[in-house]
Image (cartoon, rainbow, N blue to C red; front, side):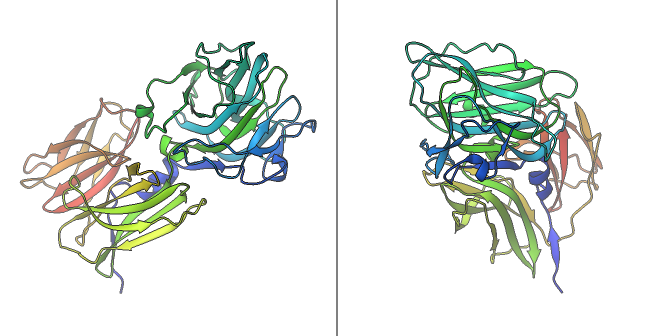
Length: 418
């Protein structure tokens, strides 16, 4: 009979419930967008949005794939639905490549937005995260972002005509009040995280939408011609911007042998997975490399570690792009011994939290890990203790993993910081 003992330092469900790719479109087709998954917003069919030559931006996952959307003139607006995001505090990240091709002076208008619409209905008027563009007599381009349809405040930075930029927009839902939208505009480089991206070029808070389930492209009077490509929408920076989208990762003991399973939803411009192993969840060594399938719609993988020991074994993935840049997955673990029971209260937490656990022996410890596998704190547990307090005041809002290691046996539970 198969024996299956699974110990996840980050439960698989965290990837799907809290972070997922909502939409990918590289416009890898020709002709009208409405013939390729997009729908008309309203009834207008004048100057239908079609494709044009695709855009290139070094190291961006959606670069140089197929064609691009050519947004010109006035007339047809189009939209696409995606799975609804409506949790208070949840964020939607949109990344895409953009090139303004109109050198004439234009008063400006918005051409991109997300929002809330009735599923299956062409009526779509509840918008947020609207991106604006305008040009002046000198051929300079200025941008703005706003939730409401009021006069925007354009940035003073002048951008160039016929130059491709990476745009990242982050929209955060606030059910109790105004919603925040941030926008980064990059001429080079692909930041590996929101922190690495630095201060956003725009940071605006005003009335938005409490549910987001669609993206729209818009043509309007006063809008310069723009080309948009490599569209990605997700619920985290890595799901939207980075080259590989990891949907889940887990580790199991099958037939007395550790097995790591993972699934992706996108592997554009991606090279390989390095399978890394550790016995302390801190110091990792690469034990194997698994080549990418290069599938734009993702793949499933598994790797069996034949070098099993009786100790707890921790695993993670080093996900390496074609240019050598990389990021790590969360950490998962396997132990042949039955896992131990943990309880957190309160959870979600604002300040302090209590972890209830079996009686600690010498060397027992509690570790807090972020969802991307970074160890944030480690605390030694007093011998004989059955409860340990955790200070969560310095953690930002989000999901974390609490690991309790005692007598060589590790167990984990999920912590949610409000």
